[in-house]
Each structure stands twice: as C-alpha cells, then as structure tokens.
Length: 174
Image (tube, rainbow, N blue to C red; front, side, top):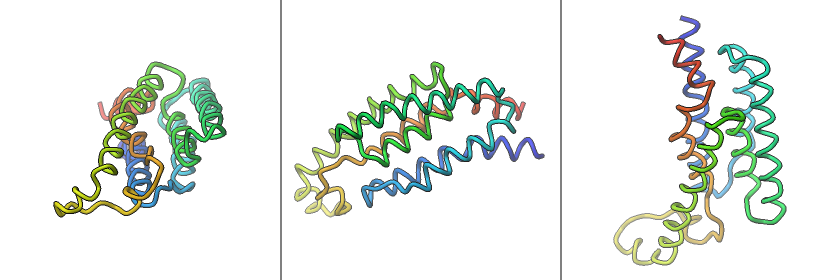
C-alpha cells in the first residue's frame, strides 16, 4: 500500500505541477516560484524513497545545474523568462543526465516553436478570433512574451514516461 501511494506521488507530482505552471503562465504570464520549488523538493523527497540510487540522484542534480546554466545565460540575454528558466531547471532534475533529458529538451524546443507560431497567429488575428465569440485571455493578446511554460508542460507530459524515476515507480506496480 505504501509503495502504491509513493508510486502515485512520483507519477503525478511533476505532471500536476507542470499543468499548474502552464495555466498560470497562460493567464498571468508568470510562473510562481513555489511551483518550481515544489517540483524540486518533490524530487528530493521522492527519489530516494522510490529506489533511485544516490549516484543517479546526484547526476539528476548535475543535469539540473547544467540546464540552469544554459537557462541563466538565455535569461541574461533576455531570450528566456526567469519563471520559464526555473521551471525548466526543476523539471530537468526529474529526468537526469540520460536520453530522457535530451528527449524532454528537444520536445520543449519543438513544442515551444509550435506554440510560438500559434500565439503569434492568434495575436495577429485576435480581433477576428474574439469576433467569432472565442474568448482570449487579455494577457495573450496584449503581452509581448510567449507563455513558454505551456511548452515546458506539454513536453513534460509527452516525455515523462521515459524518466528513470517514472520507470521505477511503474515497476512498483508490477
């Protein structure tokens, strides 16, 4: 019973937190720090309990630091928002330094590109879209930024099944 609850926490914490971040980013163009903190703290608590080996946990943290370094540089160049950088860093820790992190980051890039195109088209045609009766959040129409938290969340949903901690949690059910 305890293993099942632990596995459920592992499987659900990151996707739920990413969904909350995406919703917040869509409507307010901000990602609260507490979401990134919950994602990172959740990993630090659940990883050892789920059976992830200490060296692997260390490599997951190294992966997070590597992603943070890149995100910090992009933030300094005003290419990426601070909330997006923190969210991407916290999520990267769940993947570790392996193929699943690469899959996650590449998916973030592709989904982010598609979302950017969609949002730019919506902003270009905002009057027509709203005239059809489709409500658009004001932040979507007026902001100059793209809510990249949505892309990070979608990429997380699509690739989380490859993360080692997820695979360990799924093995607990078998």
